[in-house]
Image 1 (cartoon, rainbow over the protein chains, first blue to last red):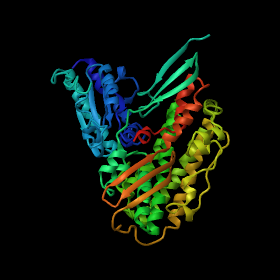
Image 2: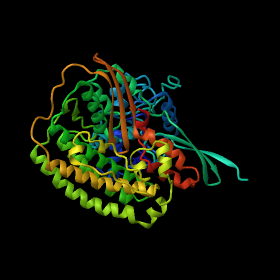
Image 3: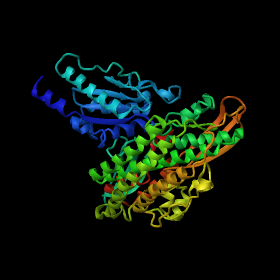
Image 4: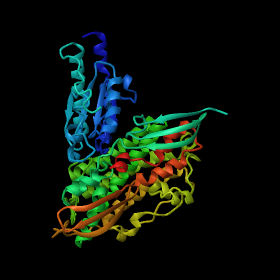
Length: 157
Length: 359
């Protein structure tokens, strides 16, 4: 691992996208940034720009309209990158899995590295997910795991 | 003549925790027209409400919005109780007020924090959110969950609050009020915040009524309408005076929300003081039949449910009108004439909750 990889592990920047969540997971993601949980002690910062981001936190069920935005955001992030799917909705669609406008989770739209279950997951769980994502990213940068292929390119296009 | 430009604001934008897109037509720096584009978080809850049975729907509706989940469940349960002629025990009605008002407080804390963050006041944002964590601890201690507390049920509430926990809430409220005093003082009196909010995004009382604004947006324009004055749950016994401000600008809306935090503090204290003994729920018998509406006051405004049932296990129709849905037309009326740099703050001033709006 080069110096760049070490530096990245000390300060992974986070991008958060709500793909149709109920806000419950989103406020817990924001709660992670606040004094009680304070992810900045791991060097994590929430930023709005995908080109600066290392980890993408996705909440929500996904529908055709925001899947396009989600794919765009993912494509704009530089390698190595990792995706964390947060909450029951992002995992499987959750309570909304039978709704007509729900694709049923993030997987299948972009590749997911870490799954955080819960409705809504507690901030501790989200932080652990983000820390696991950093490890995945490091493994990927050092060549242990191949860069993620977007297998589902045209599935929901 | 200056050339007009169209700028997309959103769906993914740092001040918006949720995706909504505003297409802004600009004449130099001034907004001429704002057209909202929605559909990024639509799930189809109303249709799902016809597919699940009426008891399961409680869990569905509280996941419409994670910020005011208890109040969604309350609105739904009150409608079903009306259809089934269920008399809710007094203790359950008071417990409903306690949880509703705690939810309102945490929602307003959340919003005041996001507002501070929109100006770049990161420390103030942290102050509000640190205070909010105390409220989240109360939820975790009384209901077992932080966000979606799932304590409202048809016929009453699912959990009781023990006397120790009631004392714990009262003790915490003292600390919360103290921190709130300091933080609200900054929000309302700081020169920079006043410069960014006073006179920005003005909505007159006439416009607010014509466009159907609700909640703090309507009360910020001087119209005293609050669904809690209808006296649902225990609000009738506790008594409530709507908080209003006259100016109709972003500052007035901020002030309404800040004052409502104190109103909620007061309501929770009075509800705990007068909390009657007795059962916390009755078991509903039979199935709902008929059509009814149910109204409650959410942190963002009035929430309205229409329910149609035909005596089977499933509802015919579940129509949900959420406060942000009603507040989007006023927002579109506020934006023309303002500067591009003020758009984020004015958009935030209606306290948009997109997952409610689109359901």
